[in-house]
Length: 320
Ligand code: ADP
Image (tube, rainbow, N blue to C red; front, side, top):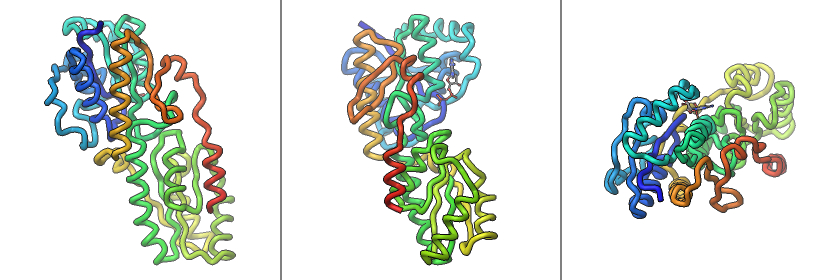
């Protein structure tokens, strides 16, 4: 049976990571397993920056955004030599297994360590919802709430000024945050990697909304990296009856106290990670699929296609 495990957060931070750290620590300690908190992701493994956690070390963090352990990127971790140095540090502390909370890059690191004899379990932590093997990631729901709260405010002011608000949300290359925000806020349009971007089409739709339907405002939710929202806003002002205004929500989406839903998800996933390590399983990632907490081999997850949101896009179209 595993006697000592480590926990780290890696890649971009997300609200709910603290809830996951807490769950991993508390569940492990309850099972007589020692827990070591590793600072700053794989960087802390390499620099031997880690401390043993007791129960109260993870008190008062459940409601806090960010990650108590800090997160960092260590591109050199792809090199075997660096991985071996990290394993030496793990061995020195008697750490036999790891829980890695992060994105698919962090999963690849976890897989590399598992292949070298340290069982690792990956937990999906990101606001982007872009990790394979799960319907939802830890942090997505909180970021969605932040987006909705802000877009609701923008609608108040847009409707007073015959304005078209073009709001860029995060998501990396995944359109979920944009789509869920658009549905939640009753946006007039959504532009994401899944919908693609056609400037002419957007301007034509706005013309129809403004001049035919006589709408006095419009909201367009845009997924980051799909188009330049500032330039689209200028075009809207030039070519439609609306005054176009771009808003990039930016990093506020990564912060804030985790939603209840993210806290529960993180707690369930943390529990599952410890259960897997106690059963001697490594190289798996935990997910929630059809509302069930499950796990699958990281290699398998990384090959899975992204969940289709076709039905939700269809719903969005029917609601406009
Ligand atoms: P995320 O985990 O959010 O996808 P990154 O892609 O930046 O974020 O990955 C986080 C860290 O995981 C990297 O800085 C690196 O230390 C490690 N990592 C990423 N890709 C690999 C890989 N192919 N092999 C080993 N480690 C990796």
